[in-house]
Length: 34
Image (cartoon, rainbow, N blue to C red; front, side, top):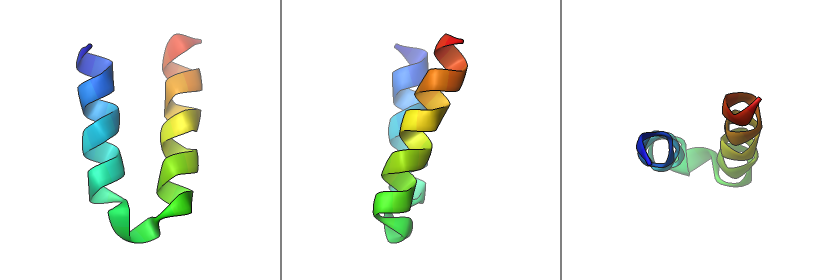
């Protein structure tokens, strides 16, 4: 749950990046799960 909040915060901070921010969040999830 904490990880989810961190990802949302990262996406919000990278909102200006748009699609790149979304891709980055997905990579973060993969790295955290690994």
